[in-house]
Amino acid sequence: MRHVIIGAGPAGVVAAETLRKLDPDGSVTMLSSEPEPPYSRMAIPYYLVEQVGEEGTWLRKGDGYFESNGITVRSGARVSNVDTEAKQLGLEGGDTIPYDKLLIATGSQPVIPPLPGVDREGVHTCWTLEDSRHIIKRATEGARVVLIGAGFIGCIILESLVNRKTRLTVIEQQNRMVPRMMDDRAGGLIKRWCQDKGVTVHTSTTVKSVDEGSDGHPLAVSMDNGESVNADLVIVCVGVKANTQFLDGSGVKTDEGILVDRYLQTSVPDVYAAGDVAQGLDFNTGEYTVQAIQPTAADHGRLAANNMAGYKLKHQGSVNMNVLDTLGLISTSFGLWMGVEGGDSAELYDGDRFRYINLQFQGDVLVGGSSLGMTEHVGVMRGLIQSKVRLGHWKDKLKNDPTRIMEAYIACTQAIGHNARVLTA
Image (cartoon, rainbow, N blue to C red; front, side, top):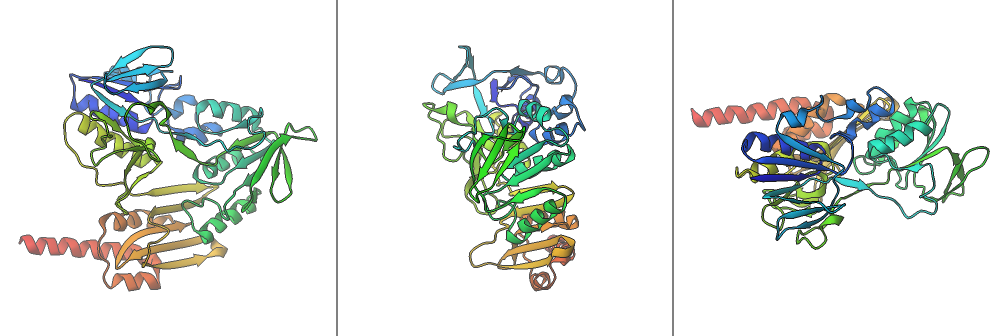
């Protein structure tokens, strides 16, 4: 069996290793469009502050790891088209690769906003190791840096830029930082925390253009509030989109990402998708969405590989989860953290101490939650959401004091275990 994987991120690597174990006689080939060995984008911030070298970003350490494990990696192999009838991939440059089972794990790419001047020298995304090399050259101590976008990726990079002792300005179009994982109160606390650390933050502000700078700075960023700030480096982090453009004419159906079933198979037999590019099942909503997070990518990769190897495993859905460290302030969100129609919630807010927790209920089931500055609740919050355990009278206790979530978890899960023992006795 010829297994071919397009993409060498976490989904692709986990799938390749799983296939190697499940189908020892088959061939496993992984294609990467970048020249580097498979690496983790989540390690880029550590590379930016020189805590690790480039090898420290590699998903698997040691020269020859993949080869010694029977996995062929072709770096710099960019797929231009997929012929699903002939079961063949076309590469840029003219090469072709046949397959029996195909996994598309091409991830996502940065969204480039249609701004005047966004193509100027010194304007970069921060998505690849190559991007990082350019950023390191310009983000020197005292350099003026403008970060467009304060979402999850932007806030990860923010810390690296502060640690490089740049003079940082952040511009976010929404009314708060990290708007896709934090509500107004928590996002506002993150903004104030960053400002206290010396970062200039503009929210509810739109960038109009990137222009020629002044006073010895090559760039200037103009905003809709009438202000303009000079910059030596501009980094664009306004979102990502699934890498699906090479699938035109393949018959593989796409929407926000590649549409897959409960087995992560696409609309074409023997073609699967995993990770940021796959529009997979959401555990909480039952809908099919793109979850561009690393835990989902790894789960997808393992599950898809099992199905490619003939071991039928049904996807139970992924829980949306985010954990973010912004200059030492930890924020988290899980599941339907924004709440559901007809549901209710519990909240604790201590702005002076940068502490916040919010729980979202549907009936007496916890369906979502978020926290800031309170890491002790992270595991149990996810556990209650994923188990869908009924809280009973503990819901009222949590509404009075949401910090008792650990007690609620222990009480409710022990009750389930006790009832199970009684039924089997």
